[in-house]
Image (cartoon, rainbow, N blue to C red; front, side):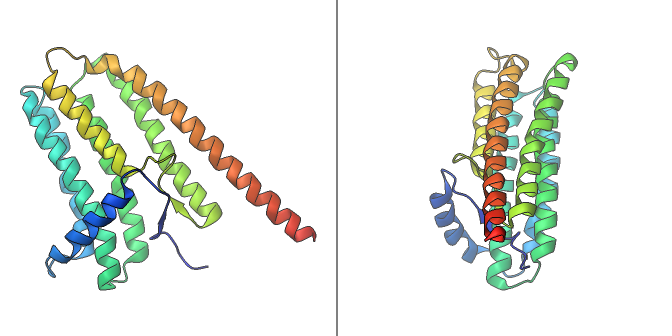
Length: 221
């Protein structure tokens, strides 16, 4: 079976604009910067997110740097696979493994950062939210194993839109720092994530059921 982990399936809201941005940026990347350099920069972005989220406890405007790190991770994540394909680096399975393993680190760093900004009694809510977000990743990997198609977006929402949501949240926190309670918003995030996960899993299992039934009918003919 041909490995298709480097070919992402699905359509998200910003996909067209993202492809145009990718085509514009790729020629600007110096030859000395390889695909694995871009992939591993996620570790730097994660460290920045956690460090400056901690500092934001004392000066909220450090959240601008957190948002910059989220945007920076988006750009390097956007370019690493494309650079590998165009330069034929051959790091297909390594790129699949490291890229998505570091995506997990990236997600954890964002929620750890928010955890540094809320009271201790609210931190368990962030743990539940992290568990739900990870469930989306698990759903993608299990679906990929079953179908051979690596789907990263559902109902028009993909990683790009999720990053944008985090940046918007950070911006709201900065401008409404004196009038907003981050902890009070967590139950709504938890409820919304739970509903969206339920819909995603329902649609995925329905698709797999249909595939199984079609394969069964074909085998019986």
